[in-house]
Length: 209
Image 1 (cartoon, rainbow, N blue to C red):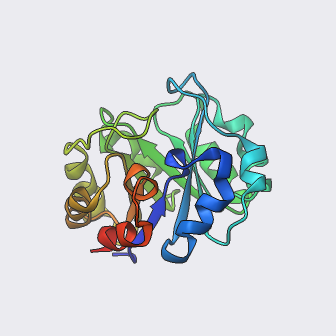
Image 2 (image 1 turned 90 degrees about the vertical axis):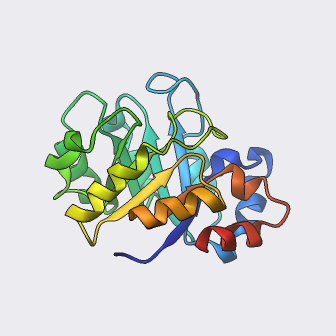
């Protein structure tokens, strides 16, 4: 199984002090998770390319496109500094071509599934992706309750792909992190648990276990 990575999600940070917020977690984190929402694929609107370009960090920038038409955005996000770009399996369009495009742009390619989407829906993409992101909440807003139905999906993916990066996002805290790691996840994405903590270093250490 690949090494464990902690990826704080800036969705839960103070956007008015974004680079200061990132600086507070950078020494203890592996990746930085950046949620992009279009108010169409999910009922929320978040940051875009200019914000990604303005981030001051040496962390690996993991961009999660929760958007209906990611093909129009791939090049802009890659040029703005994305290291990985993840698109959703539930969108319409040629997903395989988009994954190829992400790699052509020099980024790691990821595919994500929402809570009601089975692993079978992405099996045909697994030889094209560097990571799979399993959502353990309905995407759109931070601070939701962890859905344990994500765990069997991770177990299935890990059994098929021992070396695949498998991420989980939604309701991750010290307790749910243990469940996710036991199931086979190696990338833990956490927002509120990290950015809402008085001691962020300790919160991240708790996730590592």
